[in-house]
Length: 260
Image 1: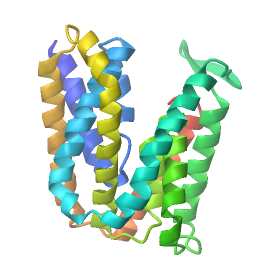
Image 2 (image 1 turned 90 degrees about the vertical axis):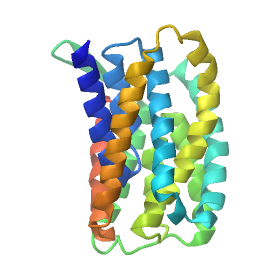
Image 3 (image 1 turned 180 degrees about the vertical axis):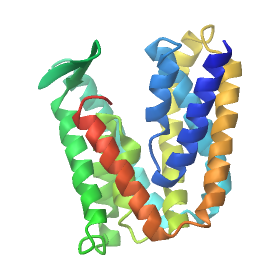
């Protein structure tokens, strides 16, 4: 249906443009949008494909500015520990119970301990950026592997790899171009490993996948990333830090409320 293409493409366009600066959120936006028209498992596959292709396009746009030292010292531990976190999630998911739940207009929202804790941490990290006395603090380069470990592990455990990655990269003393490019490279590395897990799902659901819709959503995401890259030249690192901080606070609140 036409409205299906319009809704998905608008979400991909706006999501890609906004998350170009924050370094996270496109998958969070696309999954529920795709889930409006497809079963959840198919929606996850569609999102993973668009996310990966868009990451590759952003890599072409800004990859040259990536900080190789940060990629090696932060990205590799993040990838390794994201697998450990994801495997632990499988164990916990069988024994995880919500702290409480509530309904809004017939929709049930469950608040789990892990989501609540991760959301609270994101809000606290965001406040560090918004409080003038604290936002001047930077992480020493020696703490990058630890940042990768924590980001990867809790990202794999909570499914919010990008938000936690941005928290640490924001304090690594990078320029705005390097912050975005380094995050893009690490995200692509994680996407490649994650997509290998999705290949069996892609094959299993290939008859249910709308490849025309995937192509349209991907093109829309490309346009959003291109516009974001053009706007980057007009954005200062201070503005970028505020954009990321506000996104972290919003993301954290949605996690704590059980909406994500």
